[in-house]
Amino acid sequence: MSHTPHELHEEFPQFAAKISEMKQADAHFARLAEEYHEVNRKVHRAETLVEPMDDLAEHDLRKERARLKDEIYRMLNA
Image 1 (tube, rainbow, N blue to C red):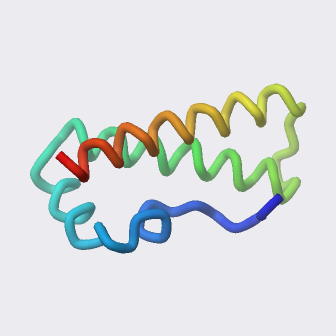
Image 2 (image 1 turned 180 degrees about the vertical axis):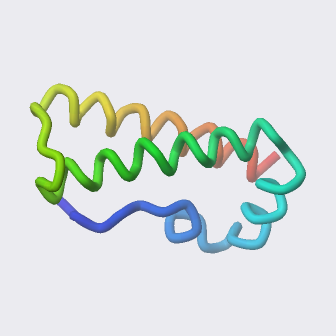
């Protein structure tokens, strides 16, 4: 398991400029990106034991992060 944060610009380096543009131009995209950031931060804090949680809760957060990432990716490719 990696304890590296999964920031959007690192997950999608080919879309770094588009991510910045869409955050400014599309309120829905900006909200998804912020939600991704919040969930990602919780996962990272759980993985590094800064804020430990039970395995099921951490697993659910990872699933939510993946769902958000998929939706963001679809929007970036539209």
